[in-house]
Length: 483
Image (cartoon, rainbow, N blue to C red; front, side, top):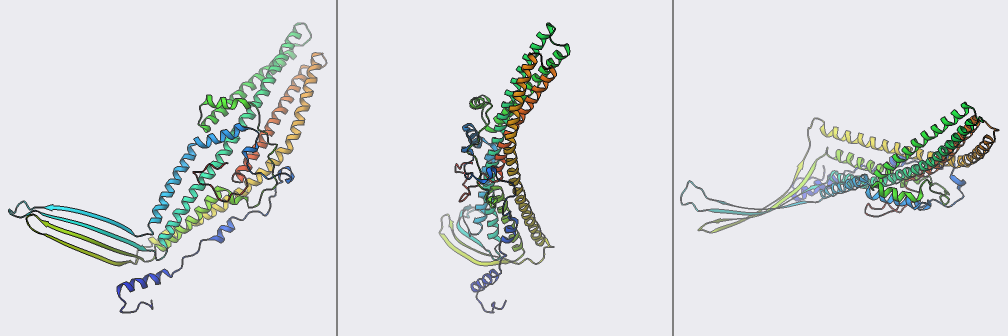
């Protein structure tokens, strides 16, 4: 290096080495690569609900006319072991980031000791006591930003852990909502099954009475008896399904089953209404607020910084070290001798041969960065797909619900008319059983479509990162932000 001229004094020589080596630039973060990975569509292809003519969707859960849903989500958030694990991971990542950040500063250690000595084999030798106090300091001059990039990687991973906590909250809220709607739909189907079973039992009894007086054939009576038994079988199966959903909600909410049942009782078999839940638009850049994508972006940045740190590890490392010591020797029956000393100077470590170990570490870090970037790109594409699919399901369910309601009403009227004709002797038992079966299927299909519409809302909520009123920043885990 031309500026290292003979005759430079050691401190100036060290300063010249620092200035010369630190001039080596570190590659900037891969913003262009991340921007390419974040590329989202200019507009959504799937149709928007309600034709885009209503107010924008902001606060999801308060717009459902069912306060139990919001209460259940809040209780689950407070009791969830997965969220508690996420908070513990945040504390771990923060501690690691603090440890990595501290490496950029000098380390100072204070040591003190005292020792007494008397030789047992030599008589008359006085006891000697040696005391010392020392202060040591060491600092790595970050020539190629190795230490700084390690700190940046740790900080990025700490941020990613906080974003993972947000993503877990959004996912958990959607899961609870799905389970809650699943329970209400199951309870509604249970009501339909109970009404169907009771109706078929009554028809079977009437058929048996008609058989006794010769107004019904044995075959028709047997058909209605079999239909009543089948209805009872469906009822028992549906009741068991509802019990299983409740067990799952108990596990999610952390409540006792008795307390949960008491909380759920007021809205038995009632699906949440969504009259105020409408969509004006879904911004094409909505994915920028998804916490899971933001977390993956931080992971990409961490991998980039670790790649830079591994590359910097192939080059020289310079450290400054120094120490100051004070000591005293006390001889029993004699005098005391004091002394002090100090040392200061740089040390340069220059890798010459390591059989390619450092190069392999750098190559591995580069490969991990490439993997993280590819994973981020895949997650962005999947997120776009999730939004599109949620919009398609929502649009389909809202259109199907009108027809399902009309079909259920029509089959219900047909079943009532057929039952009246059968009692008057103008319809057969087979026609009666068929009418009830069609009515049951239509009513069940209506409930399933209504539940599917709500599920599509929840999927859209999750796909958009918890709604799309873009926050100024993600809240800290200590805050009580509404999901």
